[in-house]
Amino acid sequence: MAINNLLAVMRLVAVALVACAVPTADAAPDAATKEAAVKLAVNLCGSCHGPDGRGDNPRIPRLAAQQRAYIEVQLKAFRNQSRGDYAAHESMWGIAATLNDDVVAALAEYFSAQKPGIGVAAANKEAAAKGRTLFERGSPERGLPPCTSCHGIDGEGLAVFPRLASQHGEYLFIQLQAIRNKLRASPVMHGLIKELTDDEIVALAAYLESK
Image 1 (spheres, helix red, strand yellow):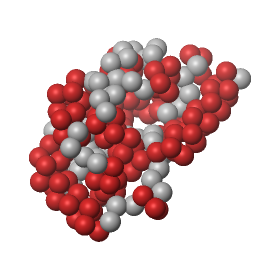
Image 2 (tube, one colour):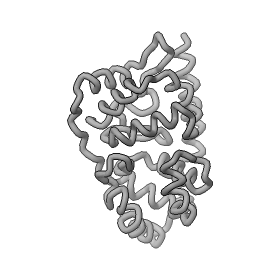
Image 3 (cartoon, one colour):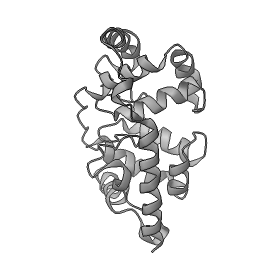
Image 4 (cartoon, one colour):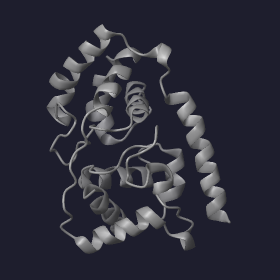
């Protein structure tokens, strides 16, 4: 019963967040803004994330095929400095401060439309298998619902809930630790992963990187 109630709350949160975050047709950037955003994505963003969003640095997230609404929400969080993990204030606060809403929307559109990265075969297959179980089934006895509820059956994400499939495992590990330890604000996730051990985070990261 507790799991069902939690899932119901999560779905309501998802609907509310989507309603606030998904851009409307009226807010779509014009052609000139889109063209400028593509140049920005390739020449500036691409220096870290790769011009197509499929960068190789294991500590920097892949943006290719990421959910558009999620990219917008995160860029705006960097811009208003409400996302405060180390990587944010070291790298992204200054960059995002220069972006207006139209450019944010155009960057999100560009990266979300790119072909997703290819998963990397897990070096530790046992850990990846454990991660798959956690991702698909959760841990009912601990009140942990399956990650698929928000992130999709294949880790493809849903609106403001990010795509996790084929993301760098090291980046995922860093971010999950930051969220668990409340170094990065994520109200929905805090309560869900607060009991995860480092080994379980490693397992989830290994599985998702392989997808």
